Length: 314
Image 1: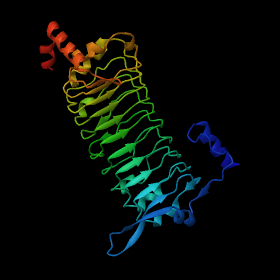
Image 2: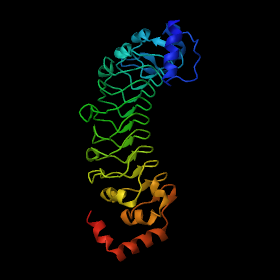
Image 3: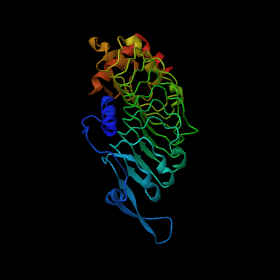
Image 4: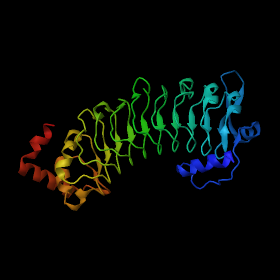
């Protein structure tokens, strides 16, 4: 009965839709581990080899204590289980890649990430996280937290995530971009949140990609001239209503190459030429490449309006 109630709870929350309510949950066994091992590789000891990849997805696991003795594992997939406690991974000090999508994690507090000092890629999508408190990742390069319940992102500082270059926070409950102090970050995915304002972006000096589709932005105020590397900006499906709301784009005009503005109220106006006057270096607006004729016309209009000198002063 308790097993069925647990499954029902997970289904109600939308985290394991489509699973059999009567499935039998179980702890990890040695036989499961043996079946999932692959990729023979040399260890740190001379002439010693061990399997370093382990696939344990969709095993109905709740307890992974048996994994603690397999210290040479480098690549581990625990997706589509019912795991709430990752503490047995503390002994897997060589772990480089970890996928824990669609499980039952509610917090990073008490989890063993401080011991996983070589971990470079981590995905904890579709769990029950509401914040990232307790997560550390000195070697992390990619962090995927899509489809959780995260409301705040305080704690994303360069001192804790010095090597992070890709951050995926799609499908959470964020209402601001503030709290991300990661000067080395290159790709930031924040689609399908509740973001109403752009804040704290001046710290993202290496960011090349910013994805903000399906939020609640009315304006692009908050973009910063410190974003010297930004090339791709997607604000599709927000509530941007007029060209005045786009003035902040001038601060990233020198580097921006692709701008996605579709599915905003602005689409009811003929905004394309106005955007090109503001961003004459653009290569693409939405899915349409900027033509030579458009670029020439925009530059001509800038000269006629005296806008070109204003642009070059930015």
